[in-house]
Image (tube, rainbow, N blue to C red):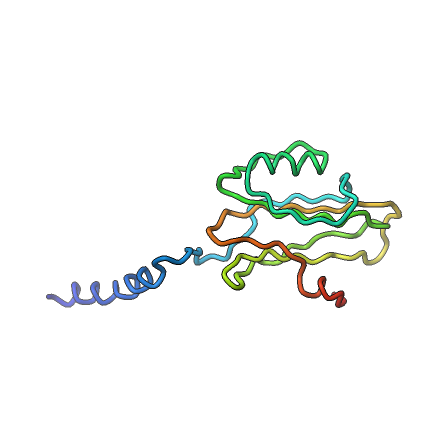
Length: 155
């Protein structure tokens, strides 16, 4: 065996090892999972706080009927959506901030925090919402408020 062939064989070992190590496990991209699209607004008919994971075309259409707008095009065979409604708020300035997804206890966790008003805001009842689209994964998916939101800790 010449030096080039030996070097190539040796270089292939980490690839072969990693393939064997991943056998039977859900595959995750080397790149972090990121949202591919985002929609948000301050006004919709949803008056109570609500979270929703959408995984198919019928649920996608129903989500947008709930928001009161035509459903944007999305390939729900390849994507899923996370939707958060804050319910009725007393002023403008509220919003939803999706945090980078993480893997916890074998599940993909989509977390979000609530952006509170700062400075001057308009005085009107609002119903903030946000929807983010992500590539589908083999992992189970959870949508939840960030830890500070659950405990009521200030952000």
